Image 1 (cartoon, rainbow, N blue to C red):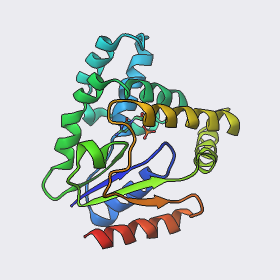
Image 2 (image 1 turned 30 degrees about the horizontal axis):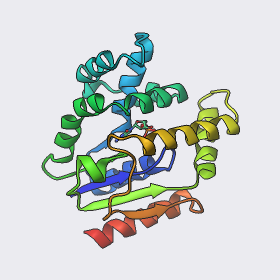
Image 3 (image 1 turned 45 degrees about the horizontal axis):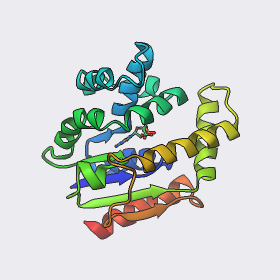
Image 4 (image 1 turned 90 degrees about the horizontal axis):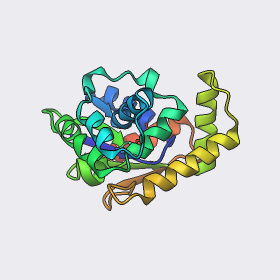
Length: 206
Ligand code: C5P
């Protein structure tokens, strides 16, 4: 069984994906980490974000086994990730590793922006997790403050709006609900209710 979760930044899809993976004993890939790793490397090596060939080289040299989720969750890296993710050449370099992960025997859980549309269109379960920008910004703000970052709610909301626009507006694999994905809008749901809603969707699709 392949479970595909897509949705905008800070929608809670990562939390649901991790929990579904543990519940069904499936391996899980947070595909945002791949783009974050490329963005982080570009920042660390002072690569010009206009230098498409250099960014494609970084994506091609990425070792997916060496991703450190903790160090990649900083706000500045999310912004860099969404810039490199708009480049078709970067996306192409990261395609095979994601498709191979999705199609391993026994199945997998993947979360991102284009799992149900591009990476695994044949997934048995597709969930589009979403919430209003304000609800997502409030969650991301609490998370960043918890990590010790000095940011205001307004800054986080502006960042979310910019990322939504870039992720939805890009020509290459934009954030899009697959026609056969079920929507889980958790604007007014707590973590537990959101989890129950996800489980109900999987039960319907199995
Ligand atoms: O999900 P997360 O916020 O970690 O993703 C960081 C960025 O990576 C997103 O803003 C998006 O631009 C990009 N991304 C993508 N396709 C995916 C996963 C993430 O374009 N499947």
